[in-house]
Image (tube, rainbow, N blue to C red; front, side):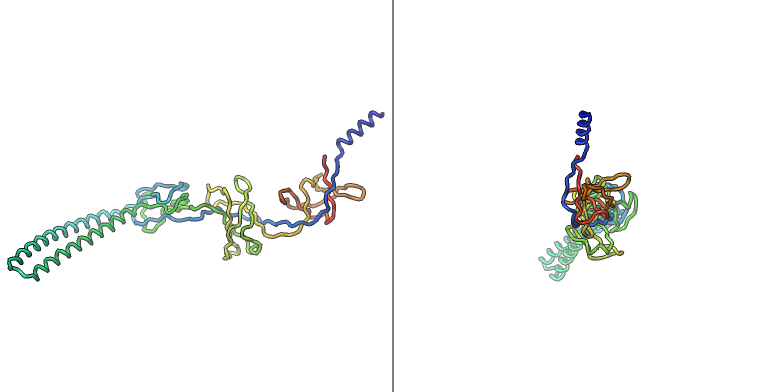
Length: 324
């Protein structure tokens, strides 16, 4: 009988929890978070426009390609430019022939003037004719350079380095000057959010933001709050490190701090769930007792997982944790 009593005493000492009494409960300041969806956007979204109207003879990029600034995205050809160059060349040849004839006439006039056969006025007219033809040839050469530059502008260049977001044209399409051939997103990416205006007063620039990405939770910073309210919403930008940029305009869940309040918080480990009900062990007059509670949202305070107690506990109650 003595051995049996000793065995029972040892087993009771092993299985019985050792209670440690914590400090009295006090209200702490907690942050209320508002869940909204942010949109991944490129800092710069610039269309690559055609500088020349004509036919798209080649298209070198598709959606999703990464390009560098100045890279040729497409080639536009205007068949009329070749005819313009041919007309300019013919005009230049005609003026060159007239200039040669005018120079011969000038040389002959100078010989005649030396022999006293012609007048100085006639010689001045011949010199003027040569100067006029030289000026006309120079103007034709400048016109040719303008047309040649137009021909070179058939190459559609990427305005910035980045990713091709859209290509609204196809090879063989006829486009006008200034029409967009592709849209490039570059300069990095950020999150843009739209928050209901009732929360505008609680938004603070530089506040920490919780973000749920495809790769897991992340942290961001509220970088800019725009003063213009559109459709009852405040627009703000969030800076996020290592934000996935595979998809522009992708929606990401964002949690914003919109208010602070006082609440009763206990460690998550102090909550005991039995038969679908939540209990917390508190110190009583005759020892620890289980008290039924209603819990709220869990939060992390100073790195420790905590959970809010909505009802069942009061300020001053002493929560008792069991150390097995």
